[in-house]
Amino acid sequence: MARFIFVTGGVVSSLGKGIASASIATLLQSRGFKVRIRKLDPYLNIDPGTMNPYQHGEVYVTEDGAETDLDLGHYERFTGINTKKSDNITTGRIYQNIITKERNGYYKGGTVQVIPHVTDEIKKFISSDLKKEDFVICEIGGTVGDIESLPFLEAIRQFSNEIKNNNCLFIHLTLVPYIKSAAELKTKPTQHSVKELRSIGIQPDMILCRSETLIPDDEKAKIALFCNVEKSNVFQSIDVKSIYEVPLKYSLECLDTKILNFFNISSKKKANLTFWKNFNKKLNKDNKKEVTISVVGKYTHLQDAYKSLTEALVHASVYNNTKLKINWIESSEIKNSKDLRFKLKNTDGILIPGGFGKRGVEGKILSINYARVKKIPFFGICFGMQISIIELCRNLLHLKNASSTEISRFTKNPVVCLLEEWEKDKKIIKGERFKIGGSMRLGSYPAKITKNTLLSKIYKGSELIHERHRHRYEVNIKYKEMLEKKGVIFSANSPDGRLPEAIEIRNHPWFVGVQFHPELKSRPFSPHNLFTSFIEAAIKNKKNK
Ligand code: GLN
Image (cartoon, rainbow, N blue to C red; front, side, top):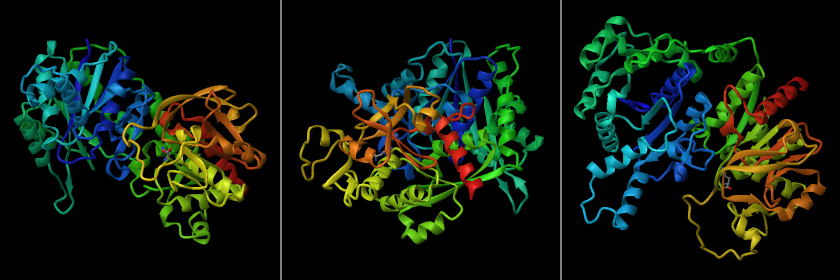
């Protein structure tokens, strides 16, 4: 029977509950246990799919096509286990399920209420779709004290009461701030947060204290006393340079052993953390050469918006023994070619990530043109590939008004468009709108690689690959032949040949566009080949300068 670990957060948001949950899972996994991590999000959206990245950060897409919270990306990167649709739920989805049932007469005329109906639905989610896991770690989004979190906290309280053999553990992550002027660490916020949690009926079994500096023993004792936990169950969660150090820090605190002791599990197997130690050593080695990658995007002021992308670049740089410098360029701030040249002065590689909408598109087109003409390694991901098609059509095919119907609805040359726009040759009706939520090509799809291409080399000769998608628009295959004549290679296509999945160009050291999101599948222990190859090309470019 699975044991459940609930991770809650207190005092402030952004303390790293996701990384904490992923690290706990990593430690337990490295001791031979089967783990699963889930996220319960208190907001009212059905999923984060329609949310602005500035509000919510990256939308992480699972193999089975769910648009989920970015923490699921951390779970996958730390444990290597693919998450599923059934690993993320929101208040919106819970209510949607309940309201659908209510409309179908499921409640037989009863009054539908938060307790028990909403809490029952949450409890059902927690224990649904399990496959003999030893541990199920559930991260509760938000901060204790938020109105939205209450039904979730009530549900996990009930759950722990109902489950047999004391099989639930509550871990609370809080902040112990350091007040510079007083040169003191303060435990009061933690005391208050735990008080709040206890008022809901949850007594944390363990407390993880996030802090800038080491927490002395007497401060730990104070937290233990006021929060009603054993002192040995107050753990330090000190700030670290890289998220990949967190499992090592927790292991030093014997967090995994304490968790096993809590559940009365005796495990002789020690956590094998060799990989994590080596990875961190390589990451922190400072005699490495530096490679600069310019990421030209739309949400560059909030790096959470490009979480998986950043991590994939980190994994690939560590693999290539290089120090990574990311030069974030906000595409809408690119004024002209001269300004762009200045912004890209020391760049070794240019990357255009996924994105939506018109803003900043012209800046991206200029950047692609620069990379193509100056033979700088270029990597276009999803929107990045679509915009490179626009650049190629405008400048190689001289179709001056070539565009995507996402950017210019009635363009004469819709080189990127909705499938039905070119398939049925349907007239685009002015003002016609399509459903925004849940109307994209999502999740894992196969693609057939064209032989004798750079892509085929990168994928080590594989003929069929599977990558994750998240987009509405497709490259318009009507322009394929014209582009091929000008040296564009369609290096991967959907198995039926209708959808271009990747492109590259002849006579360029490294120019690749992919319709999918390879960053979602990069792991520290298996960096994605597209990223390692891109970084390798950027290093070569730097050497040749
Ligand atoms: N906006 C584009 C589309 O919907 C690309 C999406 C993306 O980059 N994820 O097709």
